[in-house]
Image (cartoon, rainbow, N blue to C red; front, side, top):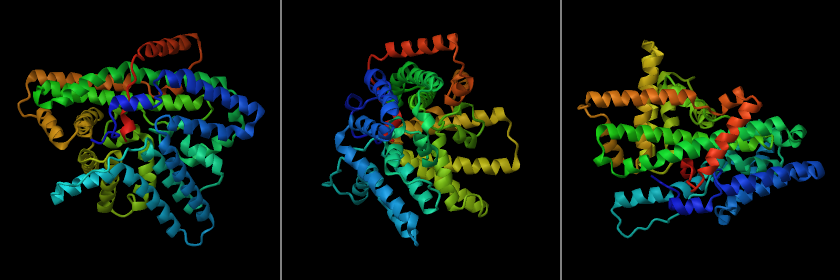
Amino acid sequence: MVVLFLGGSSLVSCVMLFSSFAFICAFLPVVVAGYFTLARVRPQWLMGWLTLASLFFYGFWKWEYVPLILLSVGVNYALSVQLQGAKKKWPLLTLGILFNVGLLGFFKYVDFFLENYFAVTGATDGQLLGVILPLGISFFTFQQIAYLVDAAQGKVEEFSWLRYTTFVTFFPQLIAGPIVHHAGMMPQFATPENQRVNWHNIALGVTIFAFGLGKKILIADNLSPEVAAGFADVGALSVLEAWQTALAYAGQLYFDFSGYTDMAIGAALLLNVRLPFNFNQPYTATSLQDFWRRWHMTLTQFLTEYIYFPLGGSRKGVIRTYLNIFLVFLISGFWHGAGWTFVLWGVAHGVWMMLERVVKRWVTVPDVLGWAVTMLFVLSSWVVFRAPDLATAQTMLLKMWTPELSWETVMGVGSGLGLTYIIGKIALDAPQIWERFKPNFWWGVSTIALFVASMISLNKATEFLYFQF
């Protein structure tokens, strides 16, 4: 598995994590206070303030990559302006897509391709480049491709360089999403009402941020040691321990990534900016299609709108529909990381989605059975997603799906699945918090208690899992 080409501790020490004292107690309050102060005295400086703050946030990790993101922004914006008046749009659009994919490909995949080339050719003197993966490049690349495509189709309504730069670099979503769309973001920066303090938004933003912080610190980080120990020596695990490790990772990944997304949504809301929801209780899904409507929702929306539909969607017959589904998930797998485990994970999801469609053409699957089968598949596929290599994934899956399952193991797995459903049902994601938010005394006490408990546990910084993607 590709991991940022940095050790975990060194990465944490140089990234301003949402779950850090530096971000919570210094950076975020200063940005919010500065934003509303400027809104009163120099509103024309607001976009500049957010852009500079976002570049500082990004450069806190590695200043050398600030010019890279500015180059990406500048080239994409220039191409989008040219597309607006071009008679032949496809050459410029093709150039823009190749630029973005090429930039992403070099930084994220060049060593993967070199490693496999050396393995195939038997080269013993070849050296990897050791390229450091820029944080967030997968996310801001997708967002800018969408902007270019929409510009070519005449769907872009404004061409403000400063607002575009703010849209791409906006710090809450810059590093790990959610993937945002220009049509939903740029108008918010230009809305006068969003330049005034909104105490309801601040209260709701703090609440969502606190829930996300609690997910990360109190749950995901406490599951991390068990997951790391299990995958470090899969050969020593019993069947039940293999299932426990898979379940622990499913919990860690969900609470870590949804926690990050909640914190991003909460932080943005302090500035009256609404980011899209990214999770909606995914472990209650009754099919894999339902799962992808609930998990990493903005990625699903992007892949559907900018890959699945352009390929023809479901408009060109059953065989073509299945092929398009497979290609979308293959791309999704490879987007997540430069490794064969990610490719296999994407292939598995694509094949399962096709099988699901075939079954549903002939059989009505009860929700309970659909949920159980879906969760068993998701848990198994997470093993491939997390494993450092295919051999480790194979060993773990063979352990989990051995024909020699004991009754105790079956009962243990069943209990684990039941717990997964309960946790998935009661774990509040941003949509549920938003819907149930009540700014009263007891809600405030609960939020403060959760926030304080999380802050007390900030004794060490741990990276967010999706930073590596």
